[in-house]
Image (tube, rainbow, N blue to C red; front, side, top):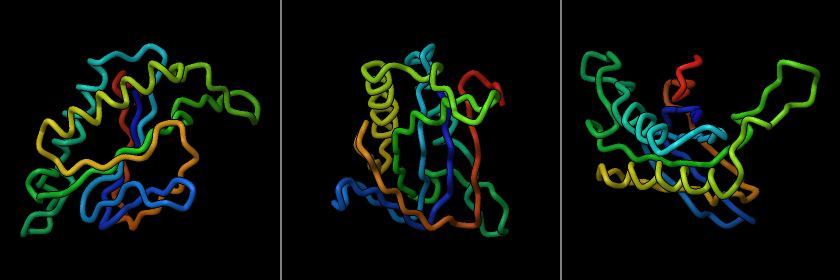
Length: 149
């Protein structure tokens, strides 16, 4: 399972021009599920992301996690994170999980965030979404549950 994690001052997602998810200060997570991912990958990434100390403390050091700043999380499914661009110019998506499996693990990830008491909003799995964000301090991280990077 792969994630692009962006610290935001606000973020939103629309489907067919309808706002379906919006947060203020917090984290935008673009989540891609691989064909060999399991619930343990969802648990690993949820724990890692929720615990990331990427918010500044009073000394302006990145020392605080999402829960410490009462931040929110917006989770958007993005199968293209599993794209392989090493050969040619057209990405291959053979590593992406089939829709049924991906949706189940995406929903598990969201459930894990909610269980931690976080204000959790989502996009719509499989929909054509428009995501807007205001990056806060331009903090962007790449995470992979298989630890390939």
